[in-house]
Length: 509
Image 1 (cartoon, rainbow, N blue to C red):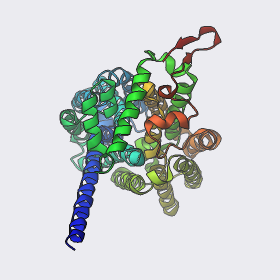
Image 2 (tube, rainbow, N blue to C red):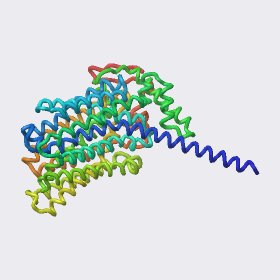
Image 3 (tube, one colour):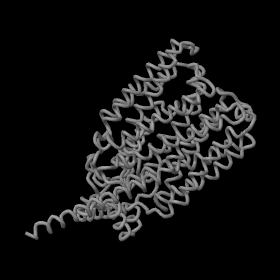
Image 4 (cartoon, helix red, strand yellow):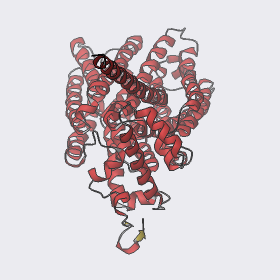
């Protein structure tokens, strides 16, 4: 009779230990991904801070510009231009120094940029500071999702990488409310814009120093032949007390894949475009970033105070509406990544986002066309509601999903350079174009400008996602080859052909 209670006790003890280990593993992964996402916080803060800064009359007077001046477009777009360069240059560090150190480098550079902006005495100094900060954010914007994707369990990758978008949203929130608070300082002081710009350096300092005590990605460790450390980190990330065999298989799968890929000897950028399999996956990752920009979300994020002014909400009222708007997206994003992302996958949210955002933009255009001076308060409120709905729909779709899809479709051979290209060109280069063009577009086209994004979504984005994008939910990074109809090099030992018929070069495994 005593054996029964003893067995129950042992079973309960084992179950409790397993639960604690599972919880600790998930908490460890979540903590790593969240802290690394301070790099994404800086992305959001540095992008959003100018929304409030350019609303400061002292700032406009100090730099001799107006709300619709090309100079203002240059101030905003130089950040995106620097980020484009930073994302591309990140390919030099992410494979050589690792994911973690790349993020640290970006954070350190960001501190320099913040100092230059906050201390700016003329336009050139401000622009240089914006470029340097953009460069830093560019590095972090491509390195953070890769780091998170390589830490994540396949079943929770939507949540873990979705934290990047979550922290981008939080960065926008903080920038808005700091800007709103600073706007209440006396209008004759530069505190209204210098303090918000200076604050960028605070989270950057925490990130640059704090990551010293965090581990490198297990895949990066295996790449550098630090196998024992990689196994230890895999256990800390994924152990639940009952899955030692699964972790051993995970390690072997990663190790075999990386060892096989090391034999390919494909340095440089050319193989990404000449190997058909890699080119296809590069285009998937780049396309999702382009489509994200063409939702028009960053035009709203950067110039929403001007949009609210067109609807009759100006000055501090416009800033208050901006502050509320910037809260809506992160709250929605948080709900999505915790409860929806890893259940519904990637394609369905992207299709939903394309349709819903397009409808909102068309309605917004119609409202503005019927309320050109913002005198009809009911229509003005409806216009603000549509802008808010764009943010909600974006946060249920492209916001978190674009980073997840981009980071997971790239094969290990080109993951660093591929994400650098997708982020630098697909995200930031397109961002530069619309950051520069949007002040003039809004001023000259008015409500018609919304149709630029609506038409692109209908003609390009929806068909591409529907017919070409793959569902990657629950698929390990090493199993993506099969999903894209490829045969993994670690399984076949066959050759990969580079270039066209005239310039083929065989690489044997």
